[in-house]
Image 1 (tube, rainbow, N blue to C red):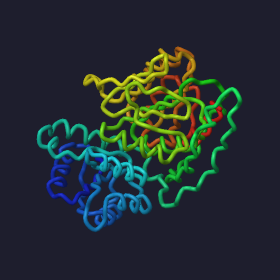
Image 2: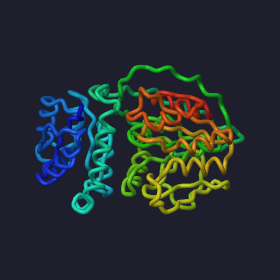
Image 3: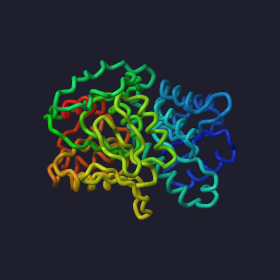
Image 4: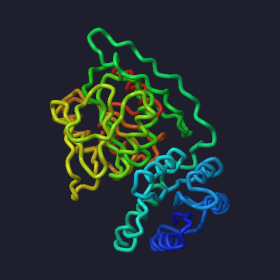
Length: 376
């Protein structure tokens, strides 16, 4: 059965082009269009599409407000179109918080110059997110504020928490309702030298949920690999830094890993770690599908830190991270995967589980607290 799509945009040109591209795929059916957020809500209720494509800036009601209403009244996977600017990144991250599943850059020139490439990417996104864990989202109710994670006092042998500035308590995020799944046992404590987290679709919200549970004096350095365009990663790092007790920044060449700091791989490039704890930022190789690539960062961590890495693979399409996790596992490091029930897209974690590389499988809301238990 064809995937039913509702196209929402105030630009008549963009609505027509997106509709034409999608309609050319026999597995996709455009069932309607809307010119603003209010129309989008009405059409979503009437047509019950499988996926909605959504612009942000529209008259009467913007895309983020529309996404919030849709998630309350008829939860449906939403693909946002975004401009490749810092402000576009900020808006897109707000839309993901509101319940959108994924986003694509809104580039009119690419649609005109590279129609086949755009068609392939757009159709792949639509088909993938149509299979996401949708319609089980419960964005209607505000998330309960979790009790803060206790912050242990620093020991005399370590001063990692002594000079950390006070940071605001994390803001609650929308919750996803899902059936509870069997959880792996509580992890054993180990002196990890690095926590490495890789993710893709659904990752921005997932990373917020995990990292906001960590105390300011979290003792292990953290590296984050999120599939994201170059224009977005700086804004995303800034957002995480404001939400979290730990510090978060977009990684730069020469940065040094340190406790209580998470470094986010810059979009369009590759991030590697050497044995001295220094970060290397390399140009994105056009032969690689992902820039940044989880496999590359995981692989460099395996080479540099042996069995002292705790790697976590969160929600995302594809299998990026599996081969890097294999190298880490061969070196004696630990691998965790997010469970299927709490993933937006159970692709990357499924690849880890199917390859029998996962030492533990946890629901999203348990990963943060288990990181604290494993490392502090």
